Image 1 (cartoon, rainbow, N blue to C red):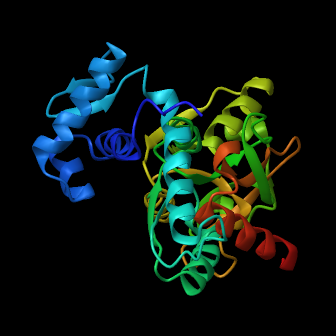
Image 2: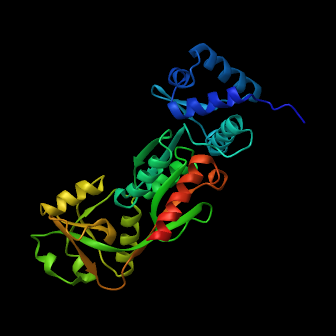
Image 3: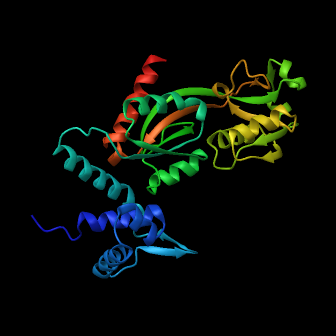
Length: 296
């Protein structure tokens, strides 16, 4: 067997610099000295005769050579840790971290609560973004798994559909629309809309349906979180766009109003890369999510 060109320590250095954004932060994360981390990086780049990081301000960011390799690099390092812990046995998940992304907190907190109950030693790092930003981050190694909202599963990812939801209008209880059973697409074109960021899967599908109906949408305000959109709708700033399951029936401030056909419908998925699906913490997350789906 040929000798590997790089040691696990060197590979860990690459991963840590990419994740932490600098040599000093990576050194602290790994428990190594800063000169040691700098030397490892220099040795790797000299052997490759190529730079692996670009400097952006005070940060080092993985460039186009390293970025596509980060998911497999992280899977390799996690597998190495599991082999070291159990010599090929099942990982105990007594420690470690799990980096996830999510779009809709209403749909995932019971899953995360169960994960924490079963694996209290694993630290969860969760970030909320639009679905398409999360997918980009997943493919570039920023996340190990993501909960996203999509019309259909992504063909290059492992996708577990957890639920399907109709897209509805979110209106304040004091709005005249709150008493309506349905709203037509023609009426939607007359409404001042409160919208999530452009990377939102719900927004993109809604826009596509509106375009097919020949409806020009009016935007009152773009907001970066679901809760801010809820508060804006409650205070009469405009009409929000959401999935039906995001709005509780007993919410004191907002209600869901159904759209006339054709109604946009979205799936809520847990997704990961194929090479990461069976890695300890990710596998445990998929197991719990699957159990929740079957029990629903």
